[in-house]
Length: 216
Image 1 (cartoon, one colour):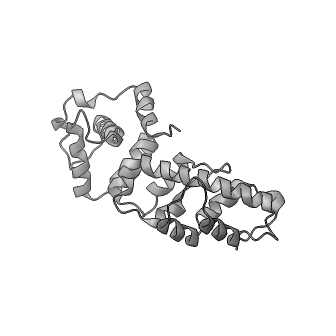
Image 2: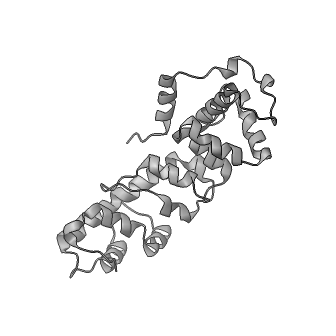
Image 3: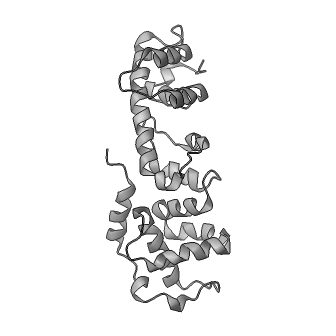
């Protein structure tokens, strides 16, 4: 049963999000496909979590209908960020999702939570940071990386057309870092051509980052 302070202070969307993140609900979703028209099995499960003496029937129905939207929102976010999440989805990621009061995901805050957590490998956290953080904010992460990982990432600069769209801003950051002239003896900055050191315009950077924003 969900513990809540007062119905007056609650809206259906936050309750739906809390219920969606419930461990039993997540286990149920793994075993059953979440369909647009709720079936009796999960409807009963939800109503067990929302007793009628606390949650009036109209509110229950509203929450149940919102569960579909919450589930769709999460699936879309997961699809758009699959290149960072790895082949085997870590269930701990679910707890890092930052939901807004209207039942939608705050993409920027969620990205920041994941970047600063240990749920994702450092390489994926860095790639995610290059798509959501300012250049200067990424420096500390870069400096804390193992040398072999930095060397591996640094090789991306040679690609004018990256293998993954999500690496466009990674390459841009690496070129910004090279142009910045930082005193990093691990790399020979002369090996980077002047052509690759040209930083894209602000408008181009914004247009690139739009690739990772929601389109629904």
